[in-house]
Length: 152
Image 1 (tube, rainbow, N blue to C red):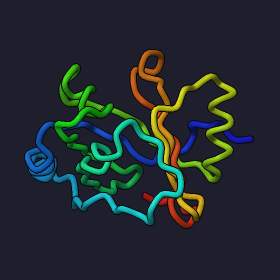
Image 2 (image 1 turned 180 degrees about the horizontal axis):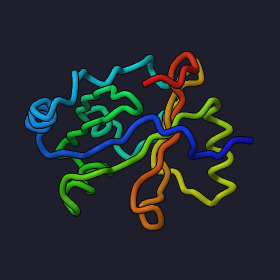
Image 3 (image 1 turned 90 degrees about the vertical axis):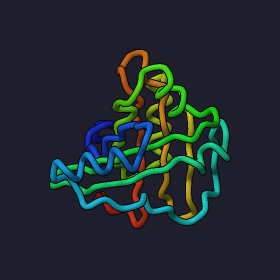
């Protein structure tokens, strides 16, 4: 059995102004940027505030070895907004690819990791965020890319 957090897919940075952040990264030569691709609807969707979650704005850039995500949270209460308000801009979570999302969630539960949000699609793709900030200094996420590909 492979380690749960082995294949880094992306690093997500929470920012107060998505357009300004993208502009800055572009000036550094990082890009191109694109909107986070919304997939098929979730058949399981457990987040604190679905309206706030839907209002999160993301831009992504695929680097040679990892995806960089920038996230601007809405003014509504959500984990990303609380992080930004308390700590300012910074790395909010690390996303790890997994071949089997349900298995990854089961394995995380055995490790004592609490879930702070999750979504599953009919094709087996989706995400699960774990409450790991206190011990890991960052939220850890497992995700399965649509089609099972581990691309970014």
